Image 1 (cartoon, rainbow, N blue to C red):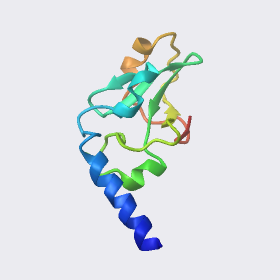
Image 2: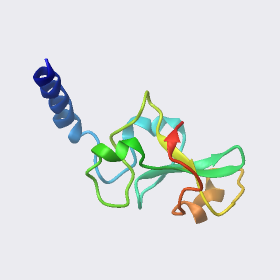
Image 3: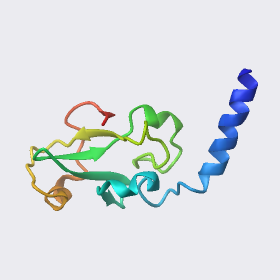
Image 4: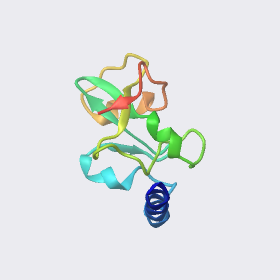
Length: 112
């Protein structure tokens, strides 16, 4: 049974590998209205007056993309791992977060 499960997982992985490229943010979440940071493949934006960014928590275990980039394949029930960005920038639109979109997480990377 374990071998069957592993075979199925590897089959899905190889089929989806071409669907989720290493040159854009996770295309499975493109309709969320978030802004894509094309430099590090992380979605980011403004929520509740503060800047946030996609980050790699559990999804880092299966991410083999370029170092320093966000996982463009993994999501949990169509949500991403994210964190509030350090820098204390307040915002009202995603554009307000452009200057801090590369900042480190101010807290843990968690599921939205």
